[in-house]
Amino acid sequence: MNKAYSEKEYVELINSALYGFVELTGGEEDEVSEAMLYSLKNGGKRVRPMLVLEFCRVCGGDVQAALPFACAVEMIHTYSLIHDDLPCMDDDDFRRGMPSCHKQYGEATALLAGDGLLTLAFSVLSKAALSAERKIEAVKVLADCAGHLGMIGGQTMDLAHEGQKITLDQLRKTDALKTGRLIRCACALGCIAAGADEEMHKAAEKYADSIGLAFQIVDDLLDITSTAEELGKPVGSDEENEKSTYPALLGMEKSVQLVDELTAEAVNALKIFGDNSRFLADYAVRLSKRNK
Image 1 (cartoon, helix red, strand yellow):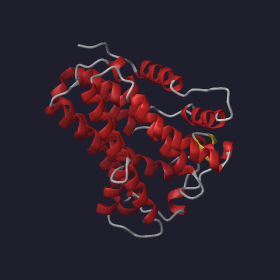
Image 2 (tube, helix red, strand yellow):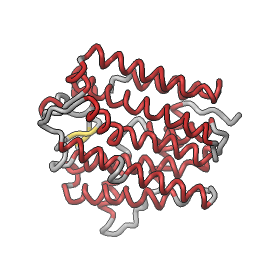
Image 3 (tube, rainbow, N blue to C red):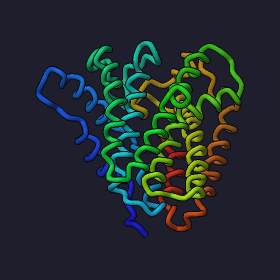
Image 4 (tube, rainbow, N blue to C red):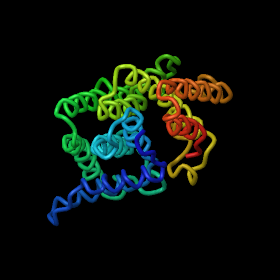
């Protein structure tokens, strides 16, 4: 059995590698590099890179070798947040209690910082000390999940639905792409790094889909029940932007119940990993009970 890591150890490992991949040259182009680092360093739970590393571990792989995969998916996630906050998208001035990238550096630099992280992600992924076959598979999975049929497609649908009443099926499809697809990607990248078999891949996908939807429902609930101080960003924006949400469609009680059901499904999907999956099971529960 591979060495087990705590959440704190994972975060330290990820941050150390992540920041080291952004090069400062001392030239004029450093403004965009600094904006990239600003957003990478602006907190975050490191959910996605942690899932990469832990699925790699439980599938028998080398966590250190998977670090570039983990950093790549976090760069994609961070770029999406920079762009999400822009005035042409969600128009948010704060992210995790700090000024959004465009409020700190201006809209043009923020846009370029997002683009910079998107492109850097694939360079970083290629640096993994893994076989060419595994890296090629990882490139395809990351591009598909982040692209127009994945996360970007979900963001497009989310914007199109503002001010509209949509069905629960439409909402679930939107969130499966916008939020869930990158979480599924993270779990898949961990499996790819470890050379996991098909059964492990399917279990990881089921776990990812369940916690991905639960994660979004919890986000919707927190937008109603939390405060700006707790979340580090404005609350009530879903109602202000006339977005359809799970609490709006199902009610608060049923939304909480659905989170619990999805979390149980995620934990159940881990059975093939035995006792080695305790971290992932506990992590699913912690994510469902988070307050920010």
